[in-house]
Image 1 (cartoon, rainbow, N blue to C red):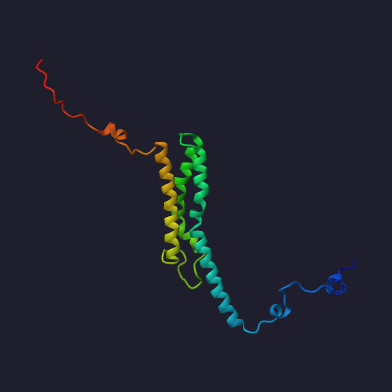
Image 2: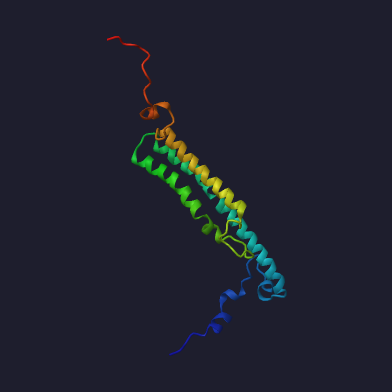
Length: 172
């Protein structure tokens, strides 16, 4: 039984004669002259990339608002099962997101921080995340109000009002 000799296949390959792709250089891939500087630079760029990703995660609820608003528009203002499901999603998701905020942002914490799940790391991004989720909650409450599910008028509280004494006097 014979095995394949990949070295022979590589030297006789018809692809050897092709030029390298644009932007490729063998010198940059094969040698590393300053590993300490490269590690520091790559660590800084990695932390910058993590911060950019944290910002993207922070504003993700705001990016989803146009689609949610379109879904609310298409569901109508009546109280049906579909519109109630969408409203439930809009009211429940912000609380779920805020409750799991520290775990969600732990992956974006800088490598220099000791406590990746503390509120003190990436504070500004977390505040923006909370604000975007509160905006989503506000849209859900607005939809509840437009469907008539929130008690906003005086007629909604008639069951809790007491009747006053009649101003008329009866002699009989």
